[in-house]
Length: 406
Image 1: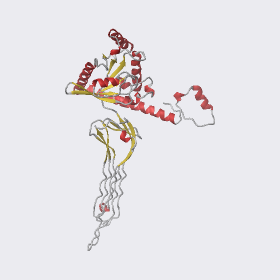
Image 2: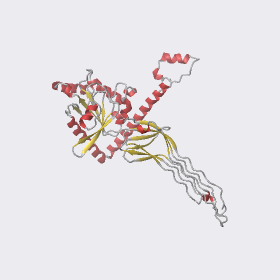
Image 3: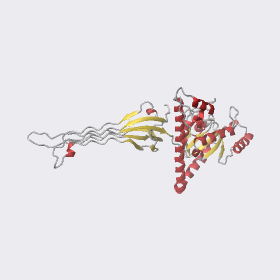
Image 4: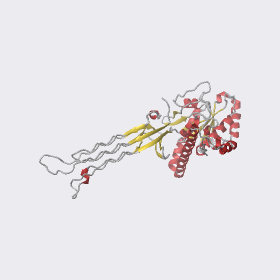
């Protein structure tokens, strides 16, 4: 199944049914009076979180959804039938955004959670509603109100306790295979993961946590290079980041430089995400001689000024992975206990989560705007030199050039 984590759709709630103008007409009964019924309310549109879905691919090509219109009122004071509500299932972890205002309408984070995104139109009134002691044969009715229409943007952020971070081929997919039942593609040649993968890690009999593996980042990712930048948002809801570094890269590159690259790109994408608790995991230890492991580990720690927890593992050989998962479970338990006992700590985490959401969305929106401008042939001021700018300024003829400052 194709993984789709962003779609744009148009929703239109049902219009309300019109009220009816009608008068009672029966044999041997004169001046029966008004009996026009009200119309029915239009159907509303809801999004519902479904734990059986993991992608928004159903909305990739079908992008317009209309709820049922309310029926018009009938004679004999009959009210029109209400339009059926339209329920659209989406994966758990979907954020709903108003495309026109960029306002977050809601977040579907629990299975079965339902969010109304378009309100159905109110019913119209039949002429019975307008009768009075002075107006015994009213000829007034009211039409149904139009249903709400909206352009929505749906963003899927996978819900995981732990997120894996690193360059391509750092061993993230191998790690998730080693500690869970997930089976992402791995091979003995370099390639990068194309879509996020989730794995459930069982620790003991009744304890488990979820790990998310996203495509690797490359240098310049914060400016839109590579695939990883599009999926960094999936780490926004994690509780802990594992920064995997290859201790013995095939291209003989420097592990410390690789670690610095990820830290730099993460900070540029979202400074708040860089503040998330992060552990350094030096992978592929089986490719390094035992007497060299300590020296390489200390060299990386010193050069990136690392002060957090450090683990040396071999995901392929499952060396050190069990101890790491035990530490992660202990960390998650202690974190949950502290949230329950310390309101200030819990409030600080909520504030950090909101900062991460805001910064990630702003960064991705800026990248989308830049791509749209380039496709339209519009240059950004940052993309041209001062001489080129002066040359454009001196031109009197030719097409109009629009300059945009990001």
